[in-house]
Image (cartoon, rainbow, N blue to C red; front, side, top):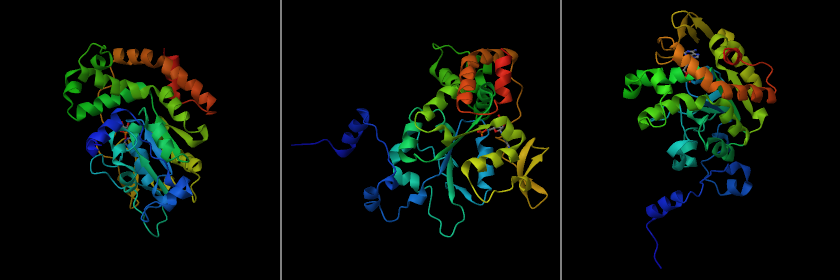
Length: 322
Ligand code: A3P
């Protein structure tokens, strides 16, 4: 009897698509009993900020991190504040790899662990994987106009020197056909796909209950973060409530709210957040209005079904402009 070497066997295992799915060891006493002694059920996040990218997730992350009872993961050497565990290849690095981002800190007041990975929002497998491990976690998402989000992503890739974004106009990118070069289609897809909000939220809602999901209007986060953070604390049931009005202030130079330091100074996000760029071309705007019409219509229906009392202004505008 002979067998292939372990690495070959492992590759075969993943090829035939047996879905690896980490369950929460803390949900079964038998699993806790055989679990490593240096692991703790406290080492997993209680809520996830799932994105999508370019909606203000870094600002939300920074504001949450100011709260004395909330802590995020330690930074990743590869992806900085984001762990990006449930999407992509990191998942195969295993549960211990993930939990090492949440070291046990003795005598801490920070009972609320969270992680923010903005790519989770539109990842096919993410809701299923996240739910298998963190079925009681709460989810926080931020939505802005999907057209604005697409344009912000394009500007982001340009600022990072992406040759495709530098060589093609935004309109060229979003209107690229399925016969266009792959690199162009990839950029088009990263601009357009995350903005199909209803579709992605429905996938999360096949695993999580509506009561576990909190939707933030990204325009409100930008213009009135104090109110947004108050509502978020209510949703998370965090006490005592942190008074953000003493800790956030509008910085006219940055054009955004920033953290107050020592009473008179502010600490704003870096220049990669809140970039200055030309307004979107009219024809790109019109194309996106048409492109997102069905998705935005589905989103309004979804928000109503979820019992959201108010529909974001950008969504109302998107549906009346067309
Ligand atoms: P732009 O740089 O296109 O303006 P993310 O952190 O998810 O990548 O989102 C980046 C976006 O957050 C920025 O996009 C900016 O508009 C928005 N944002 C919201 N509040 C902000 C704040 N207080 N400081 C900086 N950017 C903020």
